[in-house]
Image: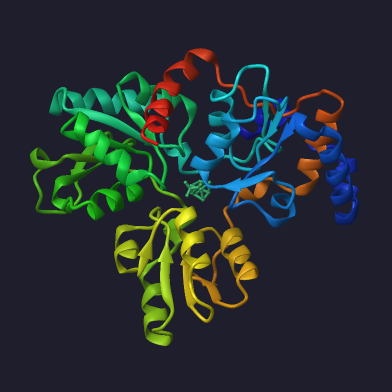
Length: 370
Ligand code: 13P
Ligand code: SF4
């Protein structure tokens, strides 16, 4: 959306919250949290800032938070500490009387923005013209409700990084080919680790509207995985040079990355897995273990604080947190809590029912896989 228009349509954070000290904001957050009691549910994604995640009722990865949001019928308000697509999913999985709030509407996801429903329809037309009725669409939950609706309409499912292998196996039991969007890396890494060679993969460029083989000498006729050319701008910042540096200077340090990293980095790492997998690996490692972790910086810092008995650093020493995740700060949280306490809803996330009905088909297929 045009930024000028966005600023005009979106109520801005009132000045008084900007003027409050951190201590006053924390006190207010605690007081309002108590006052709202079970009328409020506050889920928080692991990539959120410390200043807000401390108030979360539950923390989790995107799959866990989607499930948790659907299981709180007593809450009038769900204030989502996360990004836009997560709040949309929470809205679609809850009844209309439950109001889902995103404290700052600018908390989007650059990866989710790399696919829109019109581009999906164009891709579908071109790809089904080439391959006929052999394709099932699969979208990472990091996508808009409209893209999920496209996938639901054509018989496909959503997927998260923690269930990707299982969902991919299900998809190939339905059709010969999978269109995986919007994250090419999660799609490529998951299929490769399940045994698919890269010559069976191709990449769809939604801007050029062009399909190219994933490796130079491969034939498009053999392609069974059609990857959308999208990526996470945070995880793409972990590069081979960072791995080479640690392998040379500190060979004992284990390299642990999220599968939103590139194929080269994921294959060169010692371990790769979802946000929950990363947390579990570190939690179960013995004292003294050394890690270089390739995922979002707020989480890496939190893991280092929680595990002083281990040595935990970022795989990229110059890494910054995800900027859109970081939009959710304490002043915005206190503001929306204050409004909720007097029954007012600011920054509501509401998906139109026509879109939600189709998107739920895709989400429900994933949820049914367990
Ligand atoms: P998960 O929580 O599914 O691991 O996703 C990571 C992510 O990038 C969320 O934006
Ligand atoms: Fe999106 Fe990447 Fe940020 Fe996750 S870490 S919200 S995928 S930009």
